[in-house]
Image 1: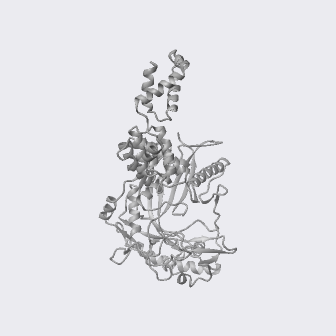
Image 2: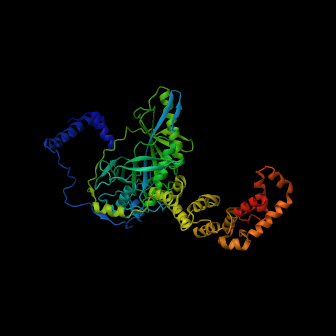
Image 3: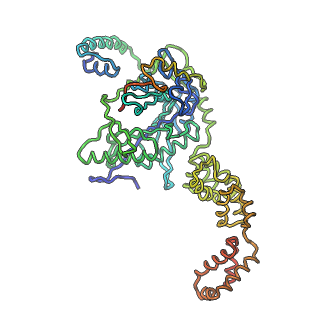
Length: 95
Length: 483
């Protein structure tokens, strides 16, 4: 499978990656190679086989409904570039 | 009579499907041990998992799973013993992970149904498509600063149930009845408090219009509807807008629209971004959620009596009308209050009092059922006094108001004010004789054929006895005397 430049631009945008136009050809080639590599798996007949979701033979661990965490605002905000009155401050986002 | 909107090109039908986000009642979040209380100081109920710090792993809250199963059972829905959590990817400032953990292909609950109680007493069934568990996002405040948004992650990671209906509703009233009924069921189950003002229940509406007999046309999704009244207004507005678009020769585009309650309109969320592409995939941090049938059965065995069952029982056991039963069961506390009044008494009389004078006084004084104007025991006592002929229904209304004002028991008030009904035939006869003697002309007219004067005599007797004469006895004796 080969990806065109428009698709690569869309993927970059969805991932919020800034990609210059002169990089698109190169990236399209790399991504296409990855896709081709993975597509080899499609050669295996998996009719009637349940998808395997994990290699670990265990079930989803669960926890009791108790408050055991939180109340650590200083830690939570420690890496924030900007904060005020206990809030994160980010560039204005309005739809 | 089907609901239609008249357009220039004929009648249009509405097609409505609703997505309700209900906050799961739990102490801690879906995948972290941070608290869920409403109104806490910003970012104090945030764990490093909720803040999406590198290396943090989600661990599911077993209570939230149980609540989702309970809700599914309450909606008579299929419980999927295996369900899968998926990542829904998008970027927004109040979503630190860059994805929401949700369920996509394999939700925990499949198809079910909700029975709507319409105001005219009829019922309608609306299908449930699915219910899945997912994380809530944080809260953004845009009005605190000229160039910044404030982010509070207290809500981030709180467990939600997204309950998706089938496009089975055909009028704004049905949509309102659906949300009302769903809220009632969730509150009975104790799985969501249904508080729309605090955002623990939020609603998105998918609305389209069509001519009768047509397949579905393109729909618009309306977001930001936070009350049942606004839901109805938003649907009405949106349907009218779409009809105008079609009748002006245009096409409705599939899009998300925001309800603006101040302007009373929906408007397009003109997002610069191309159509949403959430790139769902199974969350590699979470194994599939596998339930045992025995676990589901155990939850099922512990379900309370739900509104529909209670309503049927009230109709069958108490002989109430469909409408009365529907109103009484909508809130469990109201139903319990009614049953406390009705126990061992005439249920219809109890119902009339609970839904009549009692409900009116509650509304007038702005009281909730947890803080009633009179206790169920006292209201029951009043019903007893009517039933054993101690007081008449008319005097009972007076006693009730005195109960509300003084908080005294009805028997005490009747005693203190001397309101006991006169059932002594001698006393009633004397009162009747006096009235007849004072109105010889009217007696002559009555005997001459003016039957309607009978009511006048009854009125005079009641007046002279201060309303305390037993009305049935007055009627009987008066009839005999005038014969």
